[in-house]
Every structure is written in structure tokens, then in C-alpha cells.
Image 1 (cartoon, helix red, strand yellow):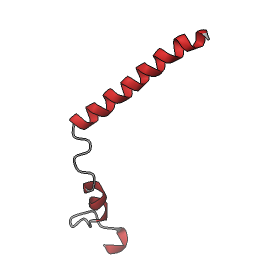
Image 2 (tube, helix red, strand yellow):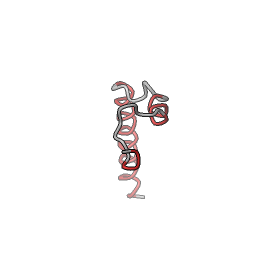
Image 3 (cartoon, one colour):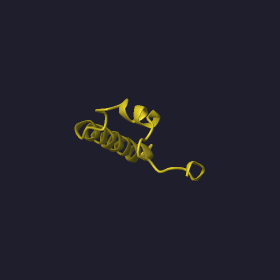
Length: 55
């Protein structure tokens, strides 16, 4: 039972810490362009490095 006196405040603190980290990530713009990175992977590079087989 005495372990609960330690575990409950620790769980509340970690939950609050996670909530603050999530709110910080929202404020800093981490979720502004969700699809942009996915589309950039599919695009070809025009001026990218050439493979040795293409030289």
C-alpha cells in the first residue's frame, strides 16, 4: 500500500510531462504539414547525384 504513495504521484507527473510535450509539439508546428514528407519521398530529384551506371 505504501508503494501507491509513490506510484500515483509519479504517474501523474509523467502524464503531465507527456501532455506538456505534446502541447509544445503542437505549438512548434510539428503537425503542420503531415502529407508533405510522404510526397517528397516519391518525387524524383532533378539535379541529384548520378549513379555510376549512368556515367
